[in-house]
Image 1 (cartoon, rainbow, N blue to C red):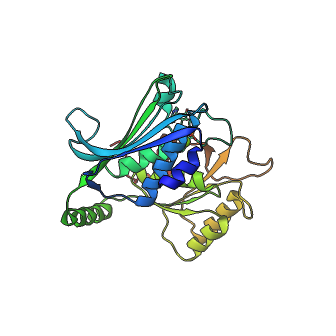
Image 2 (cartoon, protein in one colour; image 1 turned 135 degrees about the vertical axis):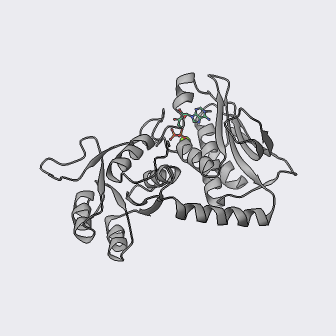
Image 3 (spheres, rainbow, N blue to C red; image 1 turned 30 degrees about the vertical axis):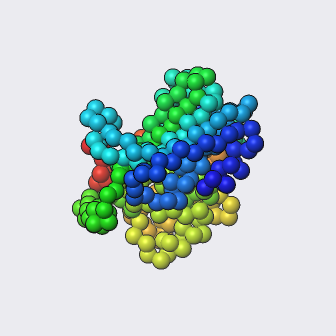
Length: 288
Ligand SMILES: Nc1ncnc2c1ncn2[C@@H]1O[C@H](COP(=O)(O)OP(=O)(O)O)[C@@H](O)[C@H]1O
Ligand SMILES: [Mg+2]
């Protein structure tokens, strides 16, 4: 990814790589890891408008009792910058979905939340160390995988687990790919199975094809068929299926009367979980 990262940070920022030759292996979706690294590097760049240095390191780390990680061996991917850093309040909220200190259009506030979701899914963690004017250290921990046999065993276990737990199958529709991706991460993080569609038309195709969906969450303002129209059509196709209409403040035009439950945008993972538990009382409680 060296070229892509160098292009993304521009000439004022020095990129340094410290990749341990004996770094162990972890099992993860490489696309998601690449996206996570790119997000961390762009955050570092954004924190260094006057230039600086970003160090990307990969090494082995051990988690001990008392850590928020299960004791064991991890592959650690760190992105360290010499930027403006974060004050305590920002640091506390940094991984919150939609939390951003950047101006509208520059930040979505979804980067760290997605990365956190990825790490948690893999039984790893995202750790942030930062202070004003002291730069930021972001560390991603992935559990070490030692043998192919173990990898296969894990995959098997996961599948059995998935069948045993009555998790919900949720269809999410948003034309904003980043928001859709962020929501998918939050829902998967809550233990649900998620299908993503980026238009009402493709959602309707899925429903018409008989996809067994337990719950549908749709954005309201989308080009073509809007969320309220999609909901009406979906009700005809799947009468019992609960639907949530996600709308930003004042996004619903006057006179658009709909009895579909609404979810205010932006929503947090906790709000999502609450609404899902209300509409699907048998869904697993992630807090339990
Ligand atoms: N490397 C960093 N240095 C300083 N602040 C950071 C850094 N990374 C993240 N932040 C803070 O955390 C917030 C959330 O980051 P993120 O989830 O990636 O969303 P976004 O980059 O879209 O704002 C940023 O807006 C910023 O305030
Ligand atoms: Mg970001």
